[in-house]
Image 1 (cartoon, rainbow over the protein chains, first blue to last red):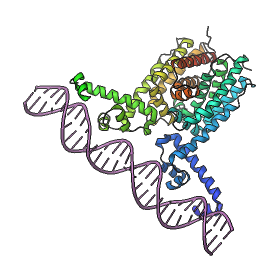
Image 2 (image 1 turned 135 degrees about the horizontal axis):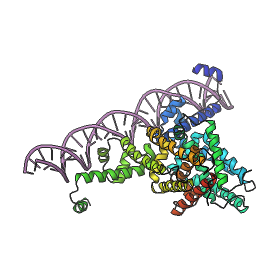
Image 3 (image 1 turned 180 degrees about the horizontal axis):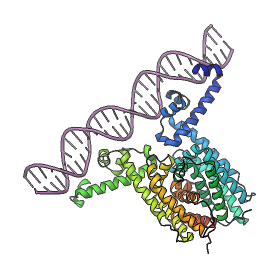
Image 4 (image 1 turned 90 degrees about the vertical axis):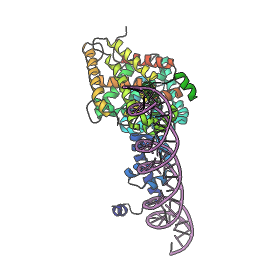
Length: 216
Length: 216
DNA sequence: CAACTACCTGACCGCGGAGTCAACAAGTTA
DNA sequence: TAACTTGTTGACTCCGCGGTCAGGTAGTTG
C-alpha cells in the first residue's frame, strides 16, 4: 500500500509532506476534540485515526495543548467573518436573515468546529479568554453599534442589541451543539438538510417579527 | 478543629453522617464536573475541595462514573418539571412567558447543573442517551402537541413546534452555558440579576411577537 | 460491655497518558 | 556523492489517575 502511494505521489517534496500531514492531523484532531473534549482526547487516538504513529504527531505539534490551540484558532476566525458583513447601511431584514443563514450553515458544515468552540466557552474558555476579550469583543461592540443605528433609524424596535445577539448566536449554534439531541427527539438518526432549513427559516421569522422589522 | 466540630455536633448519628457526606460530595462534584467536564475532573480534586480523603469519596460512590451519573440524574428531573406546566388550556402568552422565565431562572440558579447537561449533549450524551429517548422524548412530544393545539385555536401562527422549542431551550440555556462569554463581552465579571431579567424579557418579547401572539 | 455494623483512611497497585530520545530514512543542496 | 536538513518511528521514562485493601475508629444494638 505504501509502495503504491509512493509510486503515485513519487518523491513528495518536503514542503508538501509537511503541508499534507499538518492538514491531516488538524482535521482528525478537530473530530476527536469535538467528540470527546480536550481531556477526553488522547494523542494516541488521534494518531490511530490518522494512521500515523504517535511520535509523528508530536513531531509536528510539540504538545497536545499546542495542537488544540491551533485547532481553536482557526475556529474563531470563521466566527468573526460572518459578523463583519452586517453594516448599518443594510436593512436589518436582509442583514439579519443573511447572518442567521450563515450561522446555521456553520452549524451544519462545521459542526465539529462549532462544538469545540461551545465546549470551550462552557468550561470558562481557558484557552480562548484573551482572544474573546480582544478580537471577539471588538467585533461584538461594533455589531451592537450597527443594531443601535438600525433602531435609531426606526427600522426595528428598541431592544438590547447585546441580548439580541446572544439569542441569535445560541439558537443557531444549537443546531451544531444539540443536533444529536434534536435528532433523537425528532426520531431520526441525524438532522437532514430540511431540518436546518426549517430551523433557519423559523429563527429568521421569529427574530424579524420579534424585533418589529417589517417583512417584505 | 476536628475537636471543635465534634464537641459541637456531638455524636452524629450514622444516618446523618451518611446524608451529610453524600450531599457534600454531590455538591462539590457538580461544581467540578461543570467547570472541568467528566474527564477533566479527578476524584482527588473533588476530595480536596470537600476536605475529605479520596478514599472516602470512593467509599460512598464506588466509581467516578457512578458519582457522575448520580449528579446527572438529578438534573434531567429539573429539566422536565418546567415543561410539564404548559397545557393546551393556558394561553401561550402566559404559558410561554412563564416557561421562559423558569428556564432563565434555572440558568441562573442551577448553572452548574445546566452546564453539565449541555456538555453531556455536546459530546453525544454518552451517559444520558436512554433517558433522552424515553423521558425527555415523551415530554417533548406532548409539549409539541400542546403547541399544535394553540395553533389550531389560532392563538399563534402556524410554526414548527419542534424548532420553536429548540429555539427557546437554546436561548435560555445560553445564559448558563455562555454566561461567562457574555459577561466578558459586556465588560463585567459576572452577569447580574438585571442581565438575566433583561434577557428573559427580550426572549419573551421576541418569541411572543415572533409567533404572532397578541400581547394586549 | 460485648459483638456488630457503618464509617474512615493511608498505603499501595496497575494502567494509560503525555512527552523524550536516539537512530535511522528520505529528501535537498552544492 | 557528500554534507545537511527534514521527516519517521519504536522504545522508553515519568507521572497522575482510578480503584483496592487492610486495619483502624466511631456509632449501634442486645
